Image (cartoon, rainbow, N blue to C red; front, side):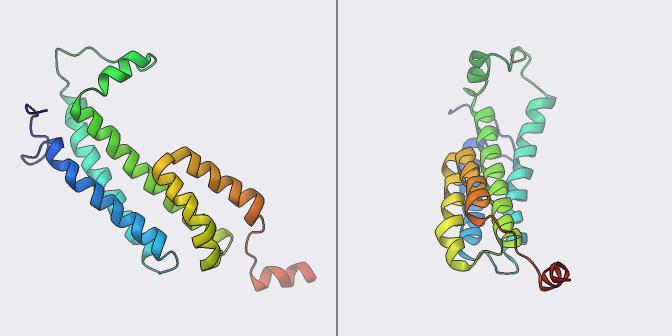
Length: 169
């Protein structure tokens, strides 16, 4: 990895590696610690957008100016995809992809729990945060846990006073 070429303003992907994680972590901390703060959901978008922009800035030149010695990967073959991810710059954008989408999915699950089911702080910390942390570590499993939680445990969407009155009439 010593011969990496700069990919963004003189930085290599190895240089950028140390910045992507604290950016993402800031979003996770706010999402888990302050779910109902009015600035939480907009603030969580900031690290998502920063890392998404970084992702695009690194990926776009790779796609527009591919190495002429490389053949196009056959994405239907595991060996081809594995070989592609052996390149540090491709591995980097793949990892940033995970960071962005895991936090985006977690944000959606948090919004769902709060807006649709109006979960209390206690239920959020006891039930939703474990789903969010599962999304962080094992993405699709955490999302599956959230879907199970919302289907079998939370069940009842929050109702407003006006919708209760309409049901009585």
